[in-house]
Length: 101
Image 1 (tube, rainbow, N blue to C red):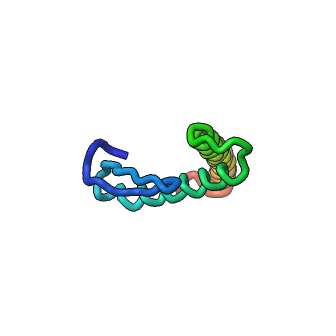
Image 2 (spheres, rainbow, N blue to C red; image 1 turned 180 degrees about the horizontal axis):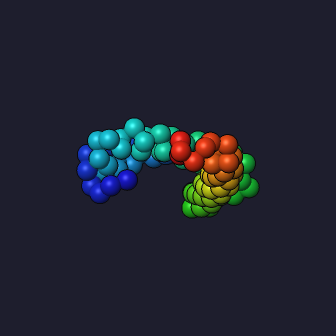
Image 3 (tube, rainbow, N blue to C red; image 1 turned 45 degrees about the vertical axis):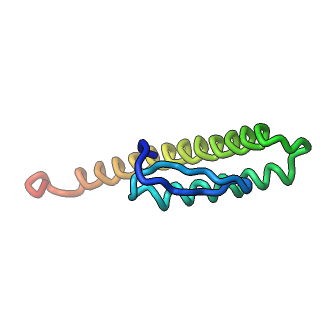
């Protein structure tokens, strides 16, 4: 999110928050708040202690874990794709005459 742009109101665990964001970020901020609200509600429903701080930390930890796993998976897929493209490039260099390249 950018600095204090256009305010958007979101609700997380029945609490209202006003967040400044650029107009083009508005829908993303709303979606992120909705996702966070869902995750915090899950934590609240399954946690033995329902302290708001604990729920927020557990939700943030789980979301960060998801993010890091997705980044790792994306990097791994990008590496595999690069290897496949290099193999295709090598095959094309062997097959095509030098005058066409």
